[in-house]
Image 1 (cartoon, chains in turn red, blue, brown, yellow):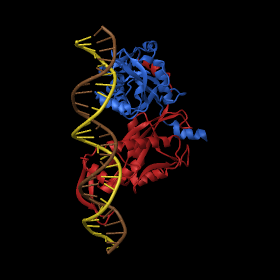
Image 2 (tube, rainbow over the protein chains, first blue to last red):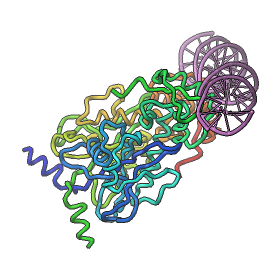
Image 3 (cartoon, chains in turn brown, purple, yellow, orange):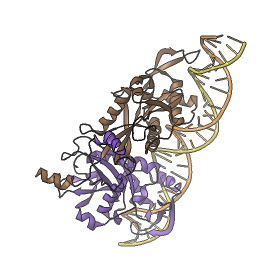
Image 4 (cartoon, helix red, strand yellow):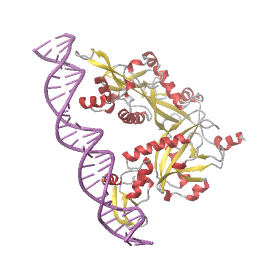
Length: 222
Length: 222
DNA sequence: GCAAAAGTGTTACTTCTACACCCATGA
DNA sequence: TCATGGGTGTAGAAGTAACACTTTTGC
């Protein structure tokens, strides 16, 4: 009976490769960066692409995304969110592959450069994005639109920053994400009302002579 | 060489069934409704589910969604948008299937009741949603959240209404989507600034004795 | 002493919200 | 004539946007 069901309901249908592509954002020197692969393997050897991987039987889609990120950066428990699925017939000229895009926010200081080098991965400024293979540019665009929306509505930005940071850094991150400059006083006024931000007693003296108070996030994702 | 690539890069990976599930919203009697299937087939015969279908080799994901909707309603060129993909390992207990959800907005008057009957499909009030199979409830919830967001930011609501409609109907639709009542004067103030809304000379005398002016949308999705 | 980044309030403007009454008509 | 839904404006509150100067300190 169960076999019967499978025959009727599933077996006549086609099966497909499913992949996950990760848009990995980092924040460095007042700019958003993406961790991209300079492919030293086929297909599209020599071209730039997002990090990707195939769905395995033993994984959920979300788990695949986490694995792909972990394999490249060594990081676990990172903010990640599904962006959408891309299913055009010839999106991958090699084979029919349906891909689901995820975006991740990481603190550039935290990732493992050795692992990245192993995969031939490089941080690339968003403003200097090279041509990407397949529909990866679309994925990036969609992820960026979501990121812009989410950073204003929610408190996800902290994933891009170190544990302690100055308000100037915080503002620069917002400016990098939104792609526009913000008024310092208005920004700080809004920040003052964020109850998940906490001023510490420590000062950062690296970026300025006077020194700026360091802040941290209280509500960590637990 | 190309074969070589395929061997290395694709062939070792698993392949999966991919399905599309459609959350079909309609608006009727001041309420949002969903077009659901009372399954007269296995798996989960006798239970309620969204309309779904499997991805075929010859279709993109979007095309599958359109086909599924067309097969059930007879409608084409309908507002549809991807909601997200669901890839938990055991979401479908019968087989491993990764499903992408789409939501559609249709005018209940337009669909083909014969086709629906053939599929054992019924309009169900959102307020009286029965238990759904698999993760279909999650899909509905996610679609509804998106719908709420989009209806306020964009002008997608018209897909639920007939060509001509009164402002009261229009408001009721918003109220149904947002799940809360709105102030009539504030609503009309906002409506007056929607440049895609056009007042006609005609009046609807069915709903009230005085009669209400009928409106239509100018910017159709072309 | 000066360059460089840190820090700090007020005002105008726009948007949002709350709220109550008259109108036209069919029954 | 009255019950029903259609239609209209205003005032206070909240939020957003524009704007400039003083402070600290390493060099």
